[in-house]
Image 1 (cartoon, one colour):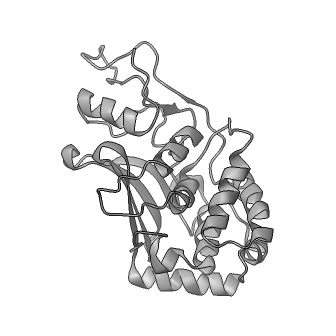
Image 2 (cartoon, one colour):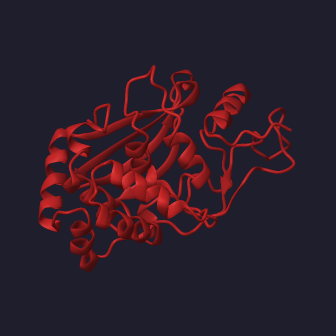
Image 3 (cartoon, one colour):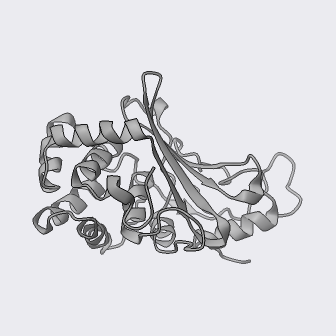
Amino acid sequence: MLDDGHGGRTAARPQWWAAYLTRHCAVADTERELVAGWFGTGAAEADAAWEAAMLEGLEARLPFGGGHAVHMYSCDLPTDRGTEYLVVHPDWGRVRGRLAAVDTRLPEPEHQQGPGLSWRELIHVANTPDHAAPGVHDPSVRLLLLLPTLGDAQLPPDAAEVVRAALAAVGTPPEGAAHLAAFVLRHLRWAPARWSAPQGRRWGRPRAGRERAVAGILRCDVPGSPRFARQLAHGITPAQGRRLARALGTWQPR
């Protein structure tokens, strides 16, 4: 479990960040030692840190606006090896909004689901922690934990600097942080996506054969994404949808 503050003992270790990002981004085996070196460690040390984290159980709750939270957890079992990223809310009952599923062992596309966040959503959620709720509140840790869900064809010019600052904040050596930021953004697991709000449909009575949608909750144009042609957290009420759109920072009332 990742604790509050700077992500707890586990996420404060550069070896752990090296393991997390190399496993959840598209990093080739031949590049793992290079990436670990930028963190100031080695690939073997990163592997050991990850194995230790798996023994404790890797789980994190990232609370954000309106009572929402991203719940992420990792498993390292023979039949289940990967990380799930889910949006949850206590009023939703059993409804879960899947952002992404990363299989850290199998590279085949059918074992993956993503991307799950646009850049705008990633930055907004990372920087709007709900301090009244338990979980990870540090914006830099939140951004890096959610970075593997990112897929966006329209990254802003300062994206690498934002990621570099987050890496530096968790203790990455200055000489490695800039290299890492540029590398990770070039090696995201998902295809660059375009995000758009549904057009011509609003909450209310759906047309025959059409799903209800709320203006502001973006959809993804990558077929492998849980948000491709589908509402995030499908099954929530119109009011809950509007609150989720606000919490994601993409609310566009019409």
